Amino acid sequence: MNYYVLPKCKDPNNQELCLTLRVSGPKPFIYSVVVATKDLEREFQTWTPIEWLDRGKDQGFILLNPETNMVIVAPDDDQAVKVNPLASLAAIDRVFWKFVGSEYGAIQLQANTKMNLNVKGSGPYPSGTLVLAYSWKKKQSNAMWTFHGQP
Image (cartoon, rainbow, N blue to C red; front, top):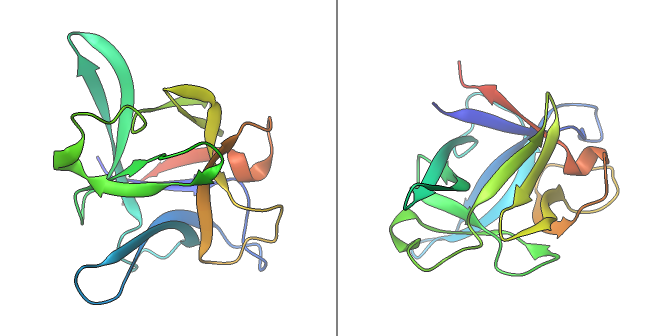
């Protein structure tokens, strides 16, 4: 199932934001993981969390953008997250995430649970703000997320 992944923080007009894959340029495309105002007509705003098992052991889940077959990767701590093709996951351990919470919670990097998906900055958060793998600051709205099923 595809989901909109929404941070608890809002844009300057108090509208919902949504985890979005920004695609720019002619081929080869340049990809950025950002938040943008939620728009049911906008491309690249849905994500499929896929549980990942290795030899029966739960590795967490990957976040796949089904329109591009790209998955979110945290290349370094406290840096912008990036995307890699689904086919290139074999040797990457910084691609697995886990959700910690109830309605809103942290999306933590499985390889370093001190790192969470985080909307960059301290607000306001305009459309196009980068998303980071950043040190966990408990219960801040830019580090709390929820999943809403796609209608």
